[in-house]
Image 1 (cartoon, rainbow, N blue to C red):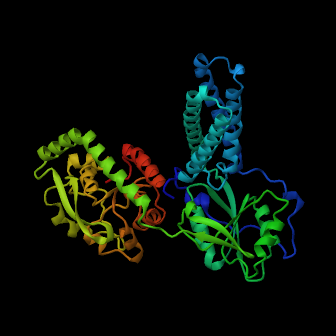
Image 2 (cartoon, rainbow, N blue to C red):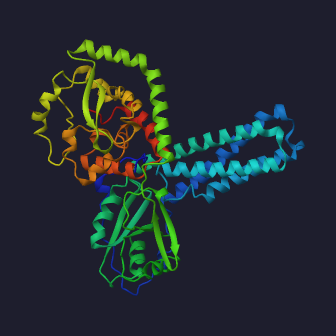
Length: 491
Protein backbone atom coordinates (compact mmCIF):
# COMPACT_ATOMS: atom_id res chain seq x y z
CA UNK A 1 0.00 0.00 0.00
CA UNK A 2 2.10 2.91 1.60
CA UNK A 3 5.21 2.46 -0.34
CA UNK A 4 4.18 1.64 -3.96
CA UNK A 5 5.84 3.80 -6.58
CA UNK A 6 3.62 2.76 -9.45
CA UNK A 7 0.88 4.97 -10.92
CA UNK A 8 -2.76 3.89 -10.91
CA UNK A 9 -3.70 2.11 -14.17
CA UNK A 10 -6.22 3.14 -16.75
CA UNK A 11 -9.54 1.54 -15.90
CA UNK A 12 -10.06 0.43 -19.50
CA UNK A 13 -6.82 -1.54 -19.48
CA UNK A 14 -7.79 -3.38 -16.29
CA UNK A 15 -11.41 -4.36 -16.99
CA UNK A 16 -12.06 -8.05 -16.25
CA UNK A 17 -13.31 -10.29 -18.96
CA UNK A 18 -15.25 -13.54 -18.98
CA UNK A 19 -14.49 -14.35 -22.59
CA UNK A 20 -12.58 -17.54 -21.80
CA UNK A 21 -14.19 -20.71 -23.16
CA UNK A 22 -15.81 -23.04 -20.69
CA UNK A 23 -14.08 -26.37 -20.12
CA UNK A 24 -15.76 -29.63 -19.27
CA UNK A 25 -15.48 -30.81 -15.64
CA UNK A 26 -13.19 -33.63 -16.62
CA UNK A 27 -10.88 -31.49 -18.69
CA UNK A 28 -7.15 -31.39 -18.03
CA UNK A 29 -4.66 -28.76 -19.14
CA UNK A 30 -3.91 -29.00 -22.83
CA UNK A 31 -0.32 -29.90 -23.75
CA UNK A 32 -0.33 -26.93 -26.13
CA UNK A 33 -0.52 -24.59 -23.15
CA UNK A 34 2.09 -26.14 -20.88
CA UNK A 35 4.88 -23.93 -22.23
CA UNK A 36 3.88 -20.36 -21.57
CA UNK A 37 5.53 -17.06 -22.31
CA UNK A 38 7.28 -15.89 -19.16
CA UNK A 39 5.49 -13.14 -17.27
CA UNK A 40 6.94 -9.65 -17.01
CA UNK A 41 7.41 -10.28 -13.27
CA UNK A 42 9.57 -13.35 -13.99
CA UNK A 43 11.66 -11.42 -16.49
CA UNK A 44 12.23 -8.65 -13.95
CA UNK A 45 13.21 -11.26 -11.37
CA UNK A 46 15.94 -12.44 -13.74
CA UNK A 47 17.04 -8.85 -14.40
CA UNK A 48 17.28 -8.23 -10.66
CA UNK A 49 19.44 -11.33 -10.17
CA UNK A 50 21.89 -10.01 -12.80
CA UNK A 51 21.86 -6.46 -11.38
CA UNK A 52 22.36 -7.72 -7.80
CA UNK A 53 25.31 -9.89 -8.82
CA UNK A 54 26.98 -7.05 -10.74
CA UNK A 55 26.47 -4.60 -7.85
CA UNK A 56 28.00 -6.99 -5.32
CA UNK A 57 30.95 -7.84 -7.58
CA UNK A 58 31.72 -4.19 -8.37
CA UNK A 59 31.42 -3.16 -4.69
CA UNK A 60 33.76 -5.91 -3.47
CA UNK A 61 36.28 -5.27 -6.24
CA UNK A 62 36.25 -1.54 -5.47
CA UNK A 63 36.80 -2.22 -1.77
CA UNK A 64 39.57 -4.69 -2.51
CA UNK A 65 41.45 -2.43 -4.94
CA UNK A 66 41.21 0.52 -2.54
CA UNK A 67 42.76 -1.61 0.22
CA UNK A 68 45.67 -3.10 -1.73
CA UNK A 69 47.91 -0.13 -1.12
CA UNK A 70 47.79 -0.64 2.64
CA UNK A 71 47.37 -4.42 2.97
CA UNK A 72 49.72 -5.73 0.31
CA UNK A 73 49.21 -8.27 -2.51
CA UNK A 74 45.95 -10.20 -2.23
CA UNK A 75 47.34 -13.63 -3.18
CA UNK A 76 49.81 -13.46 -0.30
CA UNK A 77 46.96 -13.31 2.24
CA UNK A 78 44.81 -16.44 1.99
CA UNK A 79 42.55 -15.34 4.83
CA UNK A 80 41.69 -12.07 3.13
CA UNK A 81 41.09 -13.90 -0.15
CA UNK A 82 38.78 -16.34 1.65
CA UNK A 83 36.74 -13.46 3.07
CA UNK A 84 36.37 -11.83 -0.36
CA UNK A 85 35.33 -15.09 -2.04
CA UNK A 86 33.03 -15.90 0.85
CA UNK A 87 31.30 -12.53 0.61
CA UNK A 88 30.86 -12.91 -3.15
CA UNK A 89 29.20 -16.29 -2.63
CA UNK A 90 27.27 -15.60 0.57
CA UNK A 91 25.70 -12.29 -0.45
CA UNK A 92 23.91 -13.46 -3.64
CA UNK A 93 23.00 -16.71 -1.87
CA UNK A 94 21.32 -14.87 1.03
CA UNK A 95 19.45 -12.63 -1.43
CA UNK A 96 18.09 -15.81 -3.00
CA UNK A 97 17.30 -17.55 0.30
CA UNK A 98 15.44 -14.51 1.67
CA UNK A 99 13.37 -14.34 -1.56
CA UNK A 100 14.29 -10.73 -2.28
CA UNK A 101 13.28 -11.20 -5.92
CA UNK A 102 9.99 -12.99 -5.29
CA UNK A 103 7.40 -11.90 -7.85
CA UNK A 104 4.85 -11.17 -5.12
CA UNK A 105 6.97 -8.32 -3.68
CA UNK A 106 8.28 -6.72 -6.87
CA UNK A 107 7.46 -3.02 -6.72
CA UNK A 108 5.97 -3.38 -3.24
CA UNK A 109 8.29 -0.78 -1.76
CA UNK A 110 9.11 -1.38 1.88
CA UNK A 111 8.82 -5.18 1.85
CA UNK A 112 11.31 -5.56 -1.01
CA UNK A 113 13.85 -3.29 0.67
CA UNK A 114 13.25 -4.92 4.06
CA UNK A 115 14.13 -8.33 2.65
CA UNK A 116 17.13 -6.85 0.83
CA UNK A 117 18.51 -5.33 4.04
CA UNK A 118 17.81 -8.48 6.06
CA UNK A 119 19.57 -10.71 3.53
CA UNK A 120 22.53 -8.31 3.32
CA UNK A 121 22.85 -8.20 7.10
CA UNK A 122 22.99 -12.02 7.25
CA UNK A 123 25.60 -12.14 4.48
CA UNK A 124 27.79 -9.54 6.19
CA UNK A 125 27.52 -11.25 9.58
CA UNK A 126 28.42 -14.64 8.11
CA UNK A 127 31.34 -13.14 6.19
CA UNK A 128 32.53 -11.47 9.40
CA UNK A 129 32.42 -14.90 11.05
CA UNK A 130 34.64 -16.24 8.25
CA UNK A 131 37.05 -13.33 8.82
CA UNK A 132 37.13 -14.07 12.55
CA UNK A 133 37.75 -17.79 11.89
CA UNK A 134 40.70 -17.03 9.60
CA UNK A 135 41.88 -14.21 11.91
CA UNK A 136 41.93 -11.65 9.09
CA UNK A 137 42.70 -8.63 11.26
CA UNK A 138 44.39 -6.68 8.46
CA UNK A 139 41.22 -6.44 6.29
CA UNK A 140 38.71 -4.91 8.70
CA UNK A 141 38.59 -1.53 6.95
CA UNK A 142 38.33 -3.22 3.55
CA UNK A 143 35.52 -5.45 4.80
CA UNK A 144 33.60 -2.47 6.17
CA UNK A 145 34.04 -0.61 2.86
CA UNK A 146 32.79 -3.68 0.94
CA UNK A 147 29.66 -3.80 3.11
CA UNK A 148 28.88 -0.09 2.74
CA UNK A 149 29.52 -0.02 -1.00
CA UNK A 150 27.59 -3.25 -1.53
CA UNK A 151 24.49 -1.99 0.27
CA UNK A 152 24.66 1.34 -1.53
CA UNK A 153 25.04 -0.22 -4.97
CA UNK A 154 22.30 -2.78 -4.29
CA UNK A 155 19.81 -0.10 -3.22
CA UNK A 156 20.64 2.07 -6.24
CA UNK A 157 20.40 -0.93 -8.58
CA UNK A 158 17.03 -1.97 -7.17
CA UNK A 159 15.74 1.58 -7.46
CA UNK A 160 16.80 1.83 -11.11
CA UNK A 161 15.16 -1.49 -11.97
CA UNK A 162 11.97 -0.41 -10.21
CA UNK A 163 11.86 2.86 -12.15
CA UNK A 164 12.22 0.84 -15.36
CA UNK A 165 9.40 -1.43 -14.15
CA UNK A 166 7.15 1.56 -13.45
CA UNK A 167 7.75 2.94 -16.94
CA UNK A 168 6.80 -0.42 -18.45
CA UNK A 169 3.57 -0.52 -16.44
CA UNK A 170 2.77 3.04 -17.50
CA UNK A 171 2.83 1.78 -21.09
CA UNK A 172 0.09 -0.69 -20.18
CA UNK A 173 2.29 -3.78 -19.79
CA UNK A 174 1.37 -5.49 -16.48
CA UNK A 175 3.71 -7.51 -14.30
CA UNK A 176 1.23 -10.39 -14.28
CA UNK A 177 -1.75 -11.45 -16.35
CA UNK A 178 -4.31 -12.74 -13.89
CA UNK A 179 -7.15 -15.23 -14.07
CA UNK A 180 -9.58 -14.87 -11.16
CA UNK A 181 -11.58 -17.80 -9.79
CA UNK A 182 -14.00 -17.04 -6.96
CA UNK A 183 -17.55 -17.31 -5.76
CA UNK A 184 -19.98 -14.50 -6.51
CA UNK A 185 -19.66 -12.90 -3.05
CA UNK A 186 -15.89 -12.58 -3.43
CA UNK A 187 -15.55 -11.97 -7.19
CA UNK A 188 -16.41 -8.25 -7.29
CA UNK A 189 -14.05 -7.44 -4.43
CA UNK A 190 -11.13 -9.34 -5.97
CA UNK A 191 -11.54 -7.90 -9.46
CA UNK A 192 -11.91 -4.35 -8.13
CA UNK A 193 -8.81 -4.55 -5.93
CA UNK A 194 -6.69 -6.24 -8.58
CA UNK A 195 -7.74 -3.71 -11.22
CA UNK A 196 -6.63 -0.93 -8.84
CA UNK A 197 -3.24 -2.57 -8.32
CA UNK A 198 -1.25 0.28 -9.86
CA UNK A 199 -0.65 -1.55 -13.16
CA UNK A 200 0.79 -4.68 -11.53
CA UNK A 201 -2.05 -6.93 -12.68
CA UNK A 202 -4.22 -7.22 -15.76
CA UNK A 203 -7.29 -9.41 -15.43
CA UNK A 204 -7.48 -11.48 -18.62
CA UNK A 205 -10.26 -13.82 -17.54
CA UNK A 206 -12.43 -14.97 -14.66
CA UNK A 207 -14.52 -17.92 -13.60
CA UNK A 208 -17.34 -17.56 -11.12
CA UNK A 209 -17.81 -20.68 -9.05
CA UNK A 210 -21.09 -22.48 -8.77
CA UNK A 211 -20.83 -24.80 -5.74
CA UNK A 212 -19.78 -28.26 -6.84
CA UNK A 213 -19.72 -27.38 -10.55
CA UNK A 214 -16.13 -26.21 -11.21
CA UNK A 215 -13.15 -28.54 -10.92
CA UNK A 216 -9.51 -27.46 -10.56
CA UNK A 217 -8.95 -28.67 -14.13
CA UNK A 218 -11.61 -26.19 -15.32
CA UNK A 219 -9.76 -23.31 -13.68
CA UNK A 220 -6.36 -24.27 -15.09
CA UNK A 221 -7.73 -24.91 -18.59
CA UNK A 222 -9.46 -21.54 -18.78
CA UNK A 223 -6.49 -19.70 -17.28
CA UNK A 224 -4.17 -21.15 -19.91
CA UNK A 225 -6.64 -20.39 -22.69
CA UNK A 226 -6.72 -16.74 -21.60
CA UNK A 227 -2.94 -16.44 -21.64
CA UNK A 228 -2.74 -15.89 -17.88
CA UNK A 229 0.46 -16.45 -15.93
CA UNK A 230 -1.17 -16.20 -12.48
CA UNK A 231 -4.33 -17.68 -10.96
CA UNK A 232 -5.98 -15.82 -8.08
CA UNK A 233 -8.38 -17.99 -6.11
CA UNK A 234 -10.90 -16.42 -3.75
CA UNK A 235 -11.77 -17.64 -0.28
CA UNK A 236 -14.23 -20.55 -0.05
CA UNK A 237 -13.86 -21.42 -3.72
CA UNK A 238 -15.00 -24.94 -2.90
CA UNK A 239 -16.60 -26.79 -0.02
CA UNK A 240 -13.99 -29.52 -0.39
CA UNK A 241 -10.83 -29.07 1.74
CA UNK A 242 -8.90 -30.94 -0.98
CA UNK A 243 -9.84 -28.53 -3.77
CA UNK A 244 -6.75 -26.32 -3.47
CA UNK A 245 -4.47 -29.36 -3.34
CA UNK A 246 -6.08 -30.72 -6.51
CA UNK A 247 -5.63 -27.33 -8.14
CA UNK A 248 -1.90 -27.58 -7.39
CA UNK A 249 -1.84 -31.00 -9.05
CA UNK A 250 -3.57 -29.59 -12.13
CA UNK A 251 -0.95 -26.81 -12.32
CA UNK A 252 2.06 -29.15 -12.02
CA UNK A 253 3.00 -29.17 -15.70
CA UNK A 254 2.37 -25.47 -16.30
CA UNK A 255 4.25 -22.30 -15.46
CA UNK A 256 1.22 -20.80 -13.73
CA UNK A 257 1.67 -19.01 -10.41
CA UNK A 258 -0.99 -19.43 -7.70
CA UNK A 259 -2.25 -16.75 -5.30
CA UNK A 260 -4.83 -17.59 -2.64
CA UNK A 261 -6.96 -14.80 -1.21
CA UNK A 262 -8.01 -15.40 2.43
CA UNK A 263 -10.65 -13.26 4.11
CA UNK A 264 -7.92 -10.94 5.42
CA UNK A 265 -7.58 -7.41 4.03
CA UNK A 266 -5.16 -4.52 4.53
CA UNK A 267 -2.67 -6.55 6.58
CA UNK A 268 1.03 -6.04 5.87
CA UNK A 269 3.32 -8.99 5.18
CA UNK A 270 5.30 -8.88 8.45
CA UNK A 271 2.05 -9.38 10.42
CA UNK A 272 1.19 -12.56 8.52
CA UNK A 273 2.70 -15.96 9.13
CA UNK A 274 1.61 -19.34 7.80
CA UNK A 275 1.23 -21.84 10.64
CA UNK A 276 0.87 -25.60 10.37
CA UNK A 277 -1.49 -27.15 12.95
CA UNK A 278 -2.04 -30.89 12.56
CA UNK A 279 -3.58 -31.25 9.08
CA UNK A 280 -4.52 -27.57 8.77
CA UNK A 281 -2.68 -24.69 7.18
CA UNK A 282 -3.60 -21.54 9.09
CA UNK A 283 -2.66 -17.90 8.64
CA UNK A 284 -1.46 -16.30 11.88
CA UNK A 285 -2.13 -12.54 12.08
CA UNK A 286 -0.32 -10.41 14.67
CA UNK A 287 -2.67 -7.86 16.18
CA UNK A 288 -1.59 -4.19 16.08
CA UNK A 289 -0.01 -2.96 19.34
CA UNK A 290 0.26 0.68 20.35
CA UNK A 291 2.61 0.31 23.31
CA UNK A 292 6.05 -1.14 23.95
CA UNK A 293 9.63 -0.53 22.90
CA UNK A 294 8.81 0.37 19.29
CA UNK A 295 6.48 3.15 20.38
CA UNK A 296 9.13 4.47 22.76
CA UNK A 297 11.53 4.49 19.82
CA UNK A 298 8.96 6.33 17.71
CA UNK A 299 8.56 9.03 20.36
CA UNK A 300 12.35 9.32 20.69
CA UNK A 301 12.67 9.83 16.93
CA UNK A 302 9.89 12.44 17.05
CA UNK A 303 11.62 14.31 19.85
CA UNK A 304 15.09 14.28 18.33
CA UNK A 305 13.79 14.93 14.81
CA UNK A 306 11.61 17.89 15.77
CA UNK A 307 14.45 19.54 17.74
CA UNK A 308 16.94 19.13 14.89
CA UNK A 309 14.47 20.38 12.26
CA UNK A 310 13.52 23.40 14.37
CA UNK A 311 17.21 24.28 14.71
CA UNK A 312 17.85 23.86 10.97
CA UNK A 313 14.65 25.56 9.81
CA UNK A 314 14.39 28.21 12.52
CA UNK A 315 15.59 31.17 10.43
CA UNK A 316 13.66 30.15 7.24
CA UNK A 317 10.50 29.76 9.36
CA UNK A 318 11.02 33.25 10.80
CA UNK A 319 11.32 34.68 7.27
CA UNK A 320 8.17 32.83 6.14
CA UNK A 321 6.25 34.12 9.16
CA UNK A 322 7.28 37.71 8.44
CA UNK A 323 6.30 37.29 4.77
CA UNK A 324 2.83 36.01 5.71
CA UNK A 325 2.37 38.83 8.22
CA UNK A 326 3.39 41.58 5.78
CA UNK A 327 1.52 40.36 2.68
CA UNK A 328 -2.01 40.12 4.14
CA UNK A 329 -3.87 41.40 7.22
CA UNK A 330 -3.81 39.03 10.19
CA UNK A 331 -1.34 37.06 12.32
CA UNK A 332 1.50 34.97 10.88
CA UNK A 333 0.29 31.81 12.66
CA UNK A 334 -3.07 30.10 12.43
CA UNK A 335 -4.17 28.10 15.47
CA UNK A 336 -7.11 25.70 15.48
CA UNK A 337 -8.39 23.00 17.88
CA UNK A 338 -8.00 19.58 16.31
CA UNK A 339 -8.56 15.98 17.35
CA UNK A 340 -5.47 14.22 18.66
CA UNK A 341 -4.93 10.69 19.93
CA UNK A 342 -8.18 9.15 21.22
CA UNK A 343 -9.98 12.29 20.07
CA UNK A 344 -8.40 14.54 22.72
CA UNK A 345 -8.25 18.19 21.59
CA UNK A 346 -5.00 20.04 21.03
CA UNK A 347 -4.09 23.35 19.38
CA UNK A 348 -2.62 22.73 15.94
CA UNK A 349 -0.28 25.41 14.59
CA UNK A 350 0.24 26.41 10.96
CA UNK A 351 1.44 29.39 9.01
CA UNK A 352 -1.68 31.31 8.03
CA UNK A 353 -2.43 30.65 4.36
CA UNK A 354 -5.96 32.13 4.26
CA UNK A 355 -7.65 35.45 4.88
CA UNK A 356 -8.11 36.54 8.47
CA UNK A 357 -11.77 35.47 8.83
CA UNK A 358 -11.50 32.19 6.90
CA UNK A 359 -13.28 30.11 9.56
CA UNK A 360 -16.37 32.34 9.38
CA UNK A 361 -16.71 31.52 5.66
CA UNK A 362 -16.25 27.77 6.16
CA UNK A 363 -19.92 26.73 6.83
CA UNK A 364 -21.21 28.41 3.67
CA UNK A 365 -18.52 26.85 1.52
CA UNK A 366 -19.05 23.43 3.06
CA UNK A 367 -22.68 23.30 1.94
CA UNK A 368 -21.55 22.63 -1.61
CA UNK A 369 -19.35 19.67 -0.65
CA UNK A 370 -20.10 16.13 -1.80
CA UNK A 371 -22.13 14.12 0.76
CA UNK A 372 -20.16 11.50 2.69
CA UNK A 373 -16.93 13.51 2.64
CA UNK A 374 -15.72 14.14 6.18
CA UNK A 375 -12.76 16.34 5.30
CA UNK A 376 -13.30 19.85 3.96
CA UNK A 377 -11.09 20.62 0.95
CA UNK A 378 -11.73 22.91 -2.04
CA UNK A 379 -9.28 22.94 -4.92
CA UNK A 380 -9.85 26.65 -5.70
CA UNK A 381 -10.61 27.87 -2.18
CA UNK A 382 -11.38 31.61 -2.43
CA UNK A 383 -10.08 32.19 1.11
CA UNK A 384 -6.47 31.27 0.24
CA UNK A 385 -4.05 34.22 -0.10
CA UNK A 386 -1.40 34.58 -2.81
CA UNK A 387 1.49 33.61 -0.54
CA UNK A 388 -0.81 31.01 1.05
CA UNK A 389 -1.26 29.22 -2.26
CA UNK A 390 2.52 28.82 -2.54
CA UNK A 391 3.18 27.61 1.01
CA UNK A 392 0.24 25.18 0.84
CA UNK A 393 1.46 23.72 -2.44
CA UNK A 394 4.80 22.76 -0.89
CA UNK A 395 3.42 22.08 2.62
CA UNK A 396 5.51 24.90 4.06
CA UNK A 397 2.48 26.02 6.08
CA UNK A 398 2.78 22.80 8.15
CA UNK A 399 6.27 23.56 9.53
CA UNK A 400 5.05 25.14 12.82
CA UNK A 401 3.62 21.72 13.67
CA UNK A 402 7.16 20.72 14.59
CA UNK A 403 6.30 22.46 17.87
CA UNK A 404 3.25 20.19 18.18
CA UNK A 405 5.54 17.19 17.65
CA UNK A 406 7.92 18.47 20.32
CA UNK A 407 4.97 18.84 22.74
CA UNK A 408 3.80 15.25 21.99
CA UNK A 409 0.53 16.49 20.46
CA UNK A 410 1.60 15.03 17.12
CA UNK A 411 4.15 12.72 15.53
CA UNK A 412 6.36 13.28 12.51
CA UNK A 413 4.46 10.49 10.70
CA UNK A 414 0.83 9.52 11.23
CA UNK A 415 -2.73 10.25 10.06
CA UNK A 416 -3.34 13.95 9.44
CA UNK A 417 -5.19 15.78 12.28
CA UNK A 418 -8.71 16.92 11.45
CA UNK A 419 -10.84 19.66 12.95
CA UNK A 420 -13.75 18.61 15.15
CA UNK A 421 -16.46 19.46 12.60
CA UNK A 422 -14.75 16.90 10.34
CA UNK A 423 -14.49 14.35 13.14
CA UNK A 424 -18.24 14.63 13.78
CA UNK A 425 -18.79 13.13 10.30
CA UNK A 426 -16.53 10.11 10.94
CA UNK A 427 -18.01 6.64 10.67
CA UNK A 428 -16.84 3.76 12.85
CA UNK A 429 -14.04 2.84 10.45
CA UNK A 430 -12.69 6.39 10.23
CA UNK A 431 -12.70 6.72 14.03
CA UNK A 432 -9.93 4.10 14.15
CA UNK A 433 -7.51 6.69 12.75
CA UNK A 434 -7.67 8.44 16.13
CA UNK A 435 -6.03 5.44 17.81
CA UNK A 436 -2.58 6.98 17.47
CA UNK A 437 -1.10 10.48 17.44
CA UNK A 438 -1.74 12.44 14.24
CA UNK A 439 1.27 13.20 12.06
CA UNK A 440 2.80 15.96 9.98
CA UNK A 441 2.91 13.55 7.06
CA UNK A 442 1.41 10.16 6.32
CA UNK A 443 0.47 7.66 3.65
CA UNK A 444 -2.09 10.08 2.18
CA UNK A 445 0.64 12.62 1.44
CA UNK A 446 2.81 10.16 -0.49
CA UNK A 447 -0.19 8.61 -2.27
CA UNK A 448 -1.90 11.60 -3.87
CA UNK A 449 -2.52 14.13 -1.06
CA UNK A 450 -5.74 16.09 -1.53
CA UNK A 451 -6.47 14.43 -4.89
CA UNK A 452 -7.55 11.30 -2.99
CA UNK A 453 -11.20 10.82 -2.13
CA UNK A 454 -12.29 10.43 1.49
CA UNK A 455 -12.77 6.66 1.34
CA UNK A 456 -9.27 6.09 0.00
CA UNK A 457 -7.88 8.48 2.58
CA UNK A 458 -9.46 6.46 5.40
CA UNK A 459 -8.20 3.14 4.02
CA UNK A 460 -4.64 4.48 3.84
CA UNK A 461 -4.81 5.78 7.40
CA UNK A 462 -6.21 2.47 8.67
CA UNK A 463 -3.46 0.58 6.89
CA UNK A 464 -0.88 2.77 8.61
CA UNK A 465 -2.51 2.44 12.05
CA UNK A 466 -2.71 -1.34 11.88
CA UNK A 467 0.62 -2.03 10.17
CA UNK A 468 2.84 0.64 11.69
CA UNK A 469 6.59 0.04 11.94
CA UNK A 470 9.72 2.18 12.15
CA UNK A 471 10.64 1.05 8.66
CA UNK A 472 7.29 2.22 7.32
CA UNK A 473 7.80 5.61 9.01
CA UNK A 474 11.22 6.00 7.37
CA UNK A 475 9.83 5.05 3.95
CA UNK A 476 6.95 7.54 4.27
CA UNK A 477 9.25 10.32 5.45
CA UNK A 478 11.62 9.83 2.50
CA UNK A 479 8.76 9.72 0.00
CA UNK A 480 7.26 12.84 1.56
CA UNK A 481 10.32 14.81 0.48
CA UNK A 482 9.67 13.79 -3.13
CA UNK A 483 5.90 14.42 -2.93
CA UNK A 484 6.37 17.86 -1.39
CA UNK A 485 9.01 18.83 -3.96
CA UNK A 486 6.59 17.96 -6.77
CA UNK A 487 3.79 19.94 -5.13
CA UNK A 488 1.09 17.76 -6.69
CA UNK A 489 -2.32 17.27 -5.07
CA UNK A 490 -1.85 20.00 -2.45
CA UNK A 491 -4.41 22.76 -2.12
